[in-house]
Image 1 (cartoon, rainbow, N blue to C red):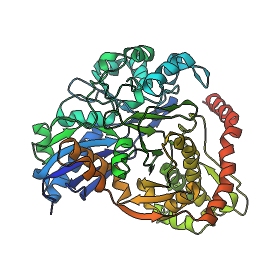
Image 2: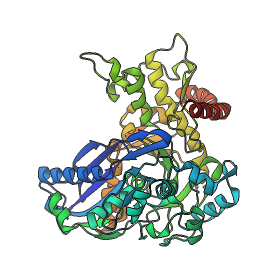
Image 3: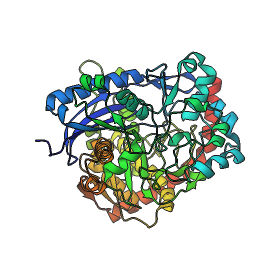
Image 4: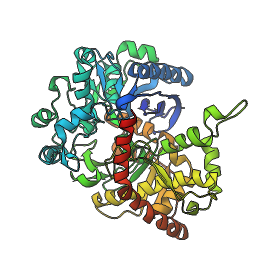
Length: 527
């Protein structure tokens, strides 16, 4: 039975997958649906997705859930969350006029570098500091963000640019298709670094920063408060989804923001770690701050005057997927009747290896790195492999390498915290693994609390944002709606083993950095 007072529809558009769910007023997931989201990669840093395909999948999945549960008429609140720093070009009605440029798309790198690049850690110090002073961060010199995307489209794809009335983040695109209204928030536009975040609740883009970026201000969506109501669902969308025409829609938010809600770690200084396709460590904090050297900053939160710590590892769970598909059981080598092992089977295999993997270390930089170093040339590798190294050790070393990388990041993040934490909440698909959760507790030397249904934590966070934003429930009720499923306490003996490996891991990047640049030059020569 649905909890009294209606239901919420939540949409979570991840880079690799789409989740749609219906939640009751108590934050309980009634039913969900998932689908893969394909990406297209090509030369010159191309990384795109079909935004129209997202929309068709969202409508179809929502309609199926409404029919299966019979709860369509009960839906009173809707919110979208998911990937950010991606760009969808649309016309005035929200129709897609070109491919979505993903946060991995670097085709605008040269154009961004011309605007922001220089000799100080790759940046023009004067221009970068103008961005940092106001927004807390600066556009990527590699072009992997909305500024780089817009510069690229305007300069290199004039056919798309001429049709584009708006350049939208994915969550704002979905919100527009549901409501018919174009909106964004300082939170959803974080990766553009175009708002003066010293001013709590600012609802205007900063003219100086737009000028430095060199993009058309008229194509930026108007800003509204994060977590506020945008409007009601369009009648035709309500009909297609089979849900109530009275459903109200709250602003789209990045997965960082709904992870805060979905972790239950919503108070100042409470830490969560997301272990998904990518990975990050965050917490609500009370003030704006930036660590330029380690690519960690605070960004506008949901409430006015609230900030969330922002950072990102480019690949976390993606490393395990790569290992499975490329090394352990590639499709082209399976043969008749062959099968690819599940993630659970890889987890079981990794558990048979001794912690520390015989000093085999994996560096998880398959797509470069963003935090605590901003280097898209960085590449992954195994260090310490010998003839005695087993397959189980290689699999486990990938899990350990991600945990070491999170410790590397945490050393920068904890400088933003008001006090040293003793625990953190963990969420995301990777958190489903007891082995990986315990590994993080041992490597970080922190108690790790896994939230209930960690793979749906962001989806639940979006539902809670929707219900709070529409007045269905209060913020404290939303906080209490998130339960802890299992707790992992650090094992002192294993912490010593992992610390020894981490001391090596922490030196690898600085030692190999010159080689990463040389390899990038070699790749360009090879074409």
